[in-house]
Structures are given as C-alpha cells and as structure tokens.
Length: 525
Ligand SMILES: [Zn+2]
Image (cartoon, rainbow, N blue to C red; front, side):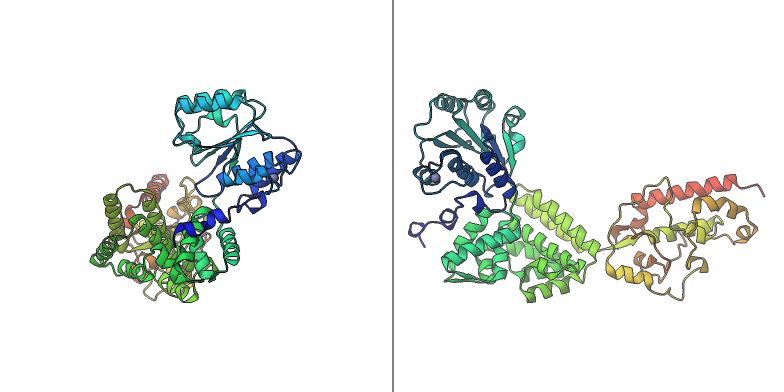
C-alpha cells in the first residue's frame, strides 16, 4: 500500500500524553511531579537507545510546559488547544526541533544563541529540542555551554542522545538527566495489541511476541514491523507472516545447523553458511537468530517455564528435544560465544569468517571435567607418596587456593553423582571418604604405621584411577558434595588438556608442593 494512503502507525498512534508513553514511567512520573511542584529545570538530557520514546517525551514535555488550556505548566496537557496541536504536529514556532547531526557546527549553535534571547512569540517558553546532541562539534558544545550557563528565563533546552558518553561533562552537569530504558516484551506486546484493536486487525499471541522480540525493546521498531505486517496481511497476522516479513531464517535451517554441530559435520555447517549468504540474508541478523535459537535451547535445558520462549507449542516442543542433546554448560558456552560474535563485526567477510570459525569450533563438542576428576587425580598423587587417599579426597578446598568459579551442573550429571559405583572401582578408599581437613590431618597420617604400610603406587599421571574408564564425566562419586562441583570445560578429543587447565594445574601443583612439605616434615625413618 502506498504510504500516502494512510498515516504510518507509529505516527498515527504516537503517544500524546505522559500516560501514553510506554515503558518509561520512571521518566514521565518524575517529569510530571516536577511540573506539579513548579520545579522546572531549564535543561533536560534524555539518554537512551533509538526508538524508545525520547523525542515523543520531549514533545509531550513541550506541550505540558506550553499548553494554553491551563494557566501554568500542567502535568496533563489538554492535547486540543492551539499550542498542543501545533507542537504535536511539529509546527509550533516556539518549539524548535533541531537535528544535532546536521546542525553541529559552532555557527549553528551561535544562531541558536542569538535566537534564544528573543522572547517566545506566543508560548510560555521557548523550547529547543536538540536530537542526537552528541554529534555537535567541540566548539559547538562550548557555545551551547555558554547558553546553558546563563539561560534566559523563557528558554528551555531538551537534549536527546543515544550516546551519553560523548557529551562533555560540563554540559551533562548543567542538565537534569533522564535515562530511558529499552521497553520490556510485555509492554510492547500490550502496546501492539492496543494498536491492532483500534485498527481492527487480528493477530495471534505468538505473532505478537515474535514482533516484540524482533523489536528488541524498541517501540518504534515494533510499530514499523507491525506496519509492514498490516500491509502484508489481510486483516489477520500469523506467526508465519512475521517470519516472512522479517526475512527470518527458517527454523529448519537452525535445526539443521544444530544437528550439524552435534554431528561435528563441518562441511554441512559451511554449506549452511553458504546457502544463507547466497540467499542474500544479512549475516548479522543470521547470527542474531542463531543466538536467539540457542538461547531458547538454554531456556529449555534449564527446565524454566516454556512461556519464556513465547513460541507456538509444537515449536517449543521441538526446541526442547534439541536442548536435551546438549549439556547446560555447553549451551551456556555456545550462547556466550555467539553473543560475543554478534557484537564483534564490521565487514561482511569478517562476519562470515568469524561465524564459520565459531561454528567449526562448536562442532568439536566438549565435555565437562568436574572437580571430582581433579580430586581423582590428586588421590592418585597422594597414593603415590603414601597419603591415604580418603584424606586426599576430602572435598574441602585448600585454604590458599581460590576455588574455581562455580558453574551450574546439568541435571544429568547430578543424577550420576547418586549412581552406585561401578564394580571395577579401583580402590575402596575412594568410596565415601570421610570429610576430613586434608591439611590438618595429613602429617599425622603420614607418620602413622598404617600409612607407612600402604604400598607405593606408580607415579601419578600414568595410573590415574578412572571409574568406568569412559571419560572425565564419570569422575563423580557417591560421596556427598558440599557445593555444586565447579565444571571446567575442555575438549573431549584431548583429555589430557583437562589437566592442563590452569585451574586444575594450580590445584595439582599446590597439592604436590604440600606433599613435599609433608615428606620433609615427617620424622626420618
Ligand atoms: Zn493544550
């Protein structure tokens, strides 16, 4: 539909009062209270990402200050007087909107300074709304600062920016600062639902949520997506329509990608990237979709309520099935790395190669090495010098060693902890060790006859006992574990890498040092 036929929704339903502004109550309430109390500052700084209501709020504030339906500034502008209607339409001569990006020279600001001295022609206040104010040049900022330092009583400045850090501190300190937030999913859904009702268009909940998710906290983006959909569909918007209009990658592609990672199928992964590039899709959008997909798997894997996905039931079920094939730790790592990737690009080629490299890395699937594996290693070490393994296995962290950062264990692993020991378990000392302070009790035990009688074992590293003999995952024992075992992730293909992990090394090295000390301290035989 050509645009001339109707007003775009964002403009048609632009909020006209503070109460209509979505998701910025912390700002609008403060502004209204200030107006009510008659404490009107001469300079406001509105900070926040694009399309979340800064300019809209600036206009409402201008109406509130100048509304002629009231004798003084009012927290609730009438919306119908000359002032309100002309400000809303953007053609009030006393409310001057300036685009900081294209009027950023010192000359431009000087002109404002000249202009600002003249009293408003009809309104109470002469209001300057400077959008993208961070684009001003340094000399323009200096000129602006002079005005802000000694403003005429009738002048009010509303500065808006997406990049607060680019504004000189001298300017910021002269302004009352308001931080606008990205808008929550539910608020956007409610807003869209309201617009659709007024427009008489039906839309499924899943579709509404998909639009809100795609808008990622931006009200203007949500409205413009809705606009496209209203034009695209005929009175009813479905989940599938949202996919089509947004040019999202088909779920099937994402499932394929997931399967290829699981199958370590590198050539399929690269073929998938090729097919996305050839189809002309935007790679950063694609990475965003992968990120969202794995985030959804992560949500499923944690067992969190399915509503968090805001997806149709069959899609959610399918995702949950895929999620089961990864461990929680794997998914956390995948999400973290795609999240990093999504922030790191500038050229299409850099995007593509970074994406490919990461996908290949993902396909080399990993396992977790729990602290139990490390303890197992230490036990072998302890046995090597005649320390009873039970004490070495005491699960108390050594005081001088900071414990590795705690990570959540997948439920599957929790279950393994409770499993009975496999029959070929190497040493009875490994079973249900008493929790003893290893450091305090070791010297006594070393000199005890029982300990001396313990046969020496070969050097550690060559004969680390391993339950089940499969992998480090099976390091869990039936002993109670005081805290969730921190997981250290390494590549499965190279198990020895687990023991090269700096955290593991530091524990092993510290333990080795401790044993040497103990041997020195032990009375000579
Ligand atoms: Zn009015």
